[in-house]
Amino acid sequence: MKLVYTEQALASLEEALGFIAPRVSYQKLNEIKNNILDAAETLLLQPQQGQKEPLLEQETLLSHK
Image (cartoon, rainbow, N blue to C red; front, side):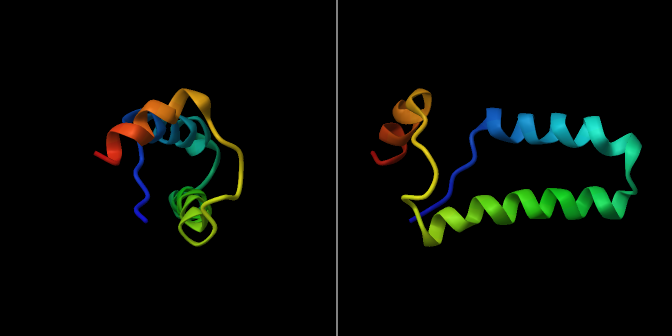
């Protein structure tokens, strides 16, 4: 299995990090980013966890071709 981040997901992550960046140190910001990415990677071990996103169903179909 392969974990693929959409452009929208990466943009949303950067937007969220940009929002909190003025409030925390660079080290803390990097830690938060790594924690978010680590949490997403748990899908590789347990792909059925969480909920299905109907709006991403087409992305899934395209990535399997």
